[in-house]
Length: 308
Image 1 (cartoon, one colour):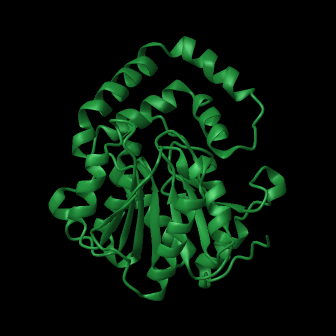
Image 2 (cartoon, rainbow, N blue to C red; image 1 turned 45 degrees about the horizontal axis):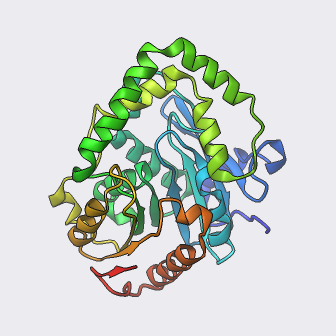
């Protein structure tokens, strides 16, 4: 697939092109890697496809752009330009060890910084877990920039007890057991990458230094993790919500309530948490149809309904 960058004009566009990294320099085989400045830090992102139909896709907590590469390739082949952003502290982006740099509302700022760098007025925004929550915060902060939302596995009110049980022990572990965890991270950093996006993303997360992981986890506890219910009800962009019934952190009840709170949303129940990675055909078709409707200016089918 030919990856032709287009649609960015002026100084920002020239800067965007100059910062492109060849795929032969360690980037994805059919995408182009770039960097952008966010304050004193550098963020990494990858671009697949070309054109004005831009989808920005965000990874889950501690994971990276590898998680979305297969989806990006498929959607780019359907005429979309897909941008995978590594949020600060993740993937190829810089990893400051200051917890204050990792508030989720600052992640939303990074998304807007990316849109400015791309020089696009509107995008469809989405992601998985952390990526969904950041997408919602971004939509509240700059609704005029968001054409639509694809929200997989939100982490909202009903997930709070399960999230606390999972992440607080992990935070304590990376704080107080750094020496043995560094042995794990060094071993993971030496593992060969498989070319399977989700697996490589997991290995990259395991290879992160414990202090970097601790900063991210601590930072997420310092600020809002999602918009309030009243704020969600003001999001008018069409939304596609994907959720499953498998785990408590990504509560299906949270997803169902989110679809009811958003004025123009459709809920699709996924078969497992990994369906989009392992058997993506059904969900990729749903996302493709949603993008077609959003960019055509049409209304999503089955508003406020649920598809299984």
